[in-house]
Length: 300
Image 1: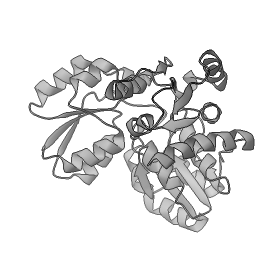
Image 2: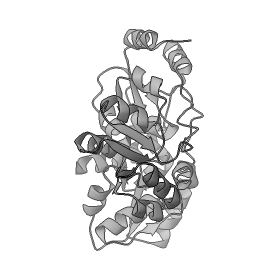
Image 3: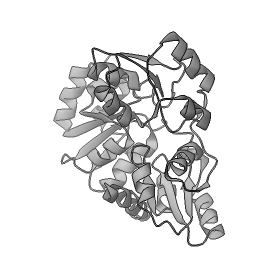
Image 4: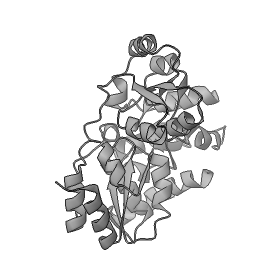
């Protein structure tokens, strides 16, 4: 079994930087150079000066890193680590929506394929969607794909209406308001953080609706000694590591994304050893998708 020390040494030898999403296994997060949410990792990917990036996450994330770094080698330990939400919409679906709503701004959640990003004007993440959507012209329709829950959350915050695609995250969709109330009874007085990919009744039942990066920042700033967390359980590792004096309780232990758990220390080591599998996005698709991602990053 590969150790974290062996992985770190091999990454240094290969000139590779390891990025890991907050939902990855705890030991994989510990092996990474940087851990974050989609926005944090997208920004970090543009700052890397080594020749290779190993992305411990799901495939669309590694695609995004490859799009932003066309001259670098981008690897993913398990290319079968997909995202069901991202697969719920295609480039052709977006083209049909744009044809039905001429003049509309096409917006995609970063949790989408390179093909979908290439058909859109701008991307958002759960951490910046409010700022990005607020920056767009008020007098134009907005198409929002694929996550209907994030889209409805931002529309509610800004008092707007969007043309929403009916996509969703299967993991977050399993959470219920009843589970939140049960967690509150078990941990009286603890604030509840949930992710904006959750259904509206779950968001309404929580105290705060935050991206995983937002949860980490808010947990550090909070005076609460105990916090209830409503998102994929992988985030608990980072929260506990960064806040050793606080207790973090999941709304539901069953909130596990199987794709996020496909990366292991073993396949991470093998990925570095063989420098494969490599993530390659066709140049024409990458060029168009890059415009949408960079439009998002320019908002700040």
